[in-house]
Amino acid sequence: MASSRLRVLSEEQVRQFRLNGFLTVEDVLSEEEVAALAAHTDLIAAGKVEHIPETSIQLEKVFREGEREVADQVLSVRKLYNLAVYDEVMWGHAAHPRIVDIIADLLGCDDIKMYGDQLFMKAPVTGTEQPWHQDSASWRDIFPMDLVSAWTAIDRATVDNGCLNFCPGTHRWGMMRGPQLGWFLDDLGSEQWPIVPAPLNAGSVSFHHSLVLHQSNANLSGQRRRGYAVHYMRASSRRDESVTDAPKVPSFRQVRGRSFAGRV
Image (cartoon, rainbow, N blue to C red; front, side, top):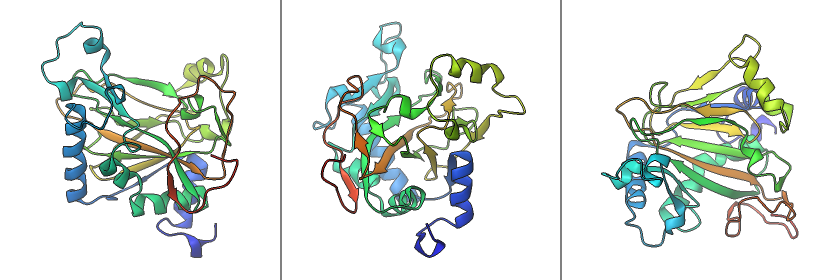
């Protein structure tokens, strides 16, 4: 994409994203936008937003399996998902002009649809680790595997409370199969494959490619670490209906631009 068509990012930022598979952009949301998103998130987690189905709310394992009693519904939630297809407040964030401008810069097109969304609550002490993975391993129905996620920090994300960690450049390996992930983990943290933390202030956004390897540690701090990830793809992408174990969600919502017959 020529620099004259870039809306938010510089050519250097786009180059860094293509090289590393992730990019941090500070202060994308205002303090007021963060506060509104945080308040609405907690209403959903508390089960107080009636149009959000219960199936969109997942508790941490210790609460799901009865190992610990639920003293605070909000702080017992691990993850909320498929929010923006049901809720206009969350859709307003998914379609936020500044976020979508950056997505357009990274995808290199204006025809964009949302694949899905997930809000990771990662409560103090009970918020669990997310192991190393590639997002496209769960989205094998979409071709090409070239989606971009926008991970917005609702709270300040630090090394102590479980910010995202990336292994730069791993999106250029393609999909890892069979024993390959184990081989990667054997060398992880070496000079060859360093771990790069991505701490964020509230309102800042981390953008990452669907094939880059990433994870987050457990929240051992006393601070909350909510992060809302919205996953975007080109509207010209194709969906392989034969991938039967892929997530089945309502129709992919148009974020910007055109849709195409026979495509997603």
